[in-house]
Length: 325
Image (cartoon, rainbow, N blue to C red; front, side, top):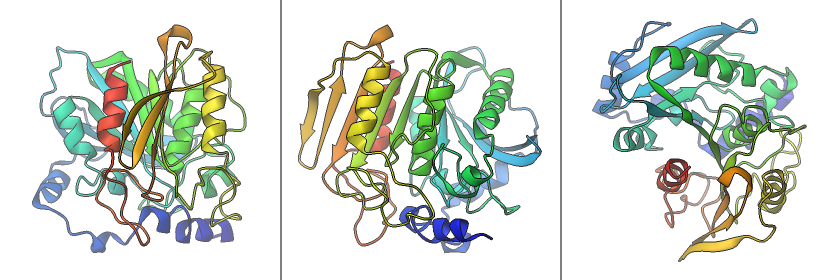
């Protein structure tokens, strides 16, 4: 295992995400029941429930989980959200409802939730990363075709489920958020909008074929992906991150928005700003929390010495943004 991958798993993209051995999780009865109901391989998806699927893409075995909400009907076009875990994490961690609540949000909002697994050197899929351009870890170093992997997931699920092609979205945490920006750059013809939590745009090239809505959520005191840019704690393992303000300016320009954002929400510990009058009626939005560090606002995982912000709920803010597109 190379030095950069070890640093990644131990530093920014593992410790920052609170990655722990699986046996450290106090699984709920609901989580255990979900695992029993999972279907391995590429069996058909035809009803609500949880499925584990796999494929070989670009010579690499890849995995992903799918949650079909309890209200799903094959006669009704349904939104789909692809959700990308942080670096050093895996699909099971991101799909753990006890910590992120994204399965519950899928059920209450009525969208199909998809949890792909990043590239890992381990058969278990643990300690996985995403190739987001200038970050991160082994996925970047091997130039893994994660974008192609996502294209195949979308293609397969559209053949299995009644997915609304105009309401396909992506969001992610940290390295997963960085990767969501790459999808905005390279798959704007597929995704209606993306949301990134604690991960800025560090793509090497970016030429979206059509305007795409962008939501960014970030804590001012994030000490891993620094709000104002820079290397954070793990320079060798990761990269010198683009700042949040520079990311917002980039996407407001790419989408042809007004140069000055408008404050649209403010509460104790958080505010949101929107760049308006963008091409094709898209929107670029930034929500900032005062505290919370490198975490998912409203989530239940404590990282480092402080809990995540409770001033906003990332799940609620993201879905409100997606459903308004």
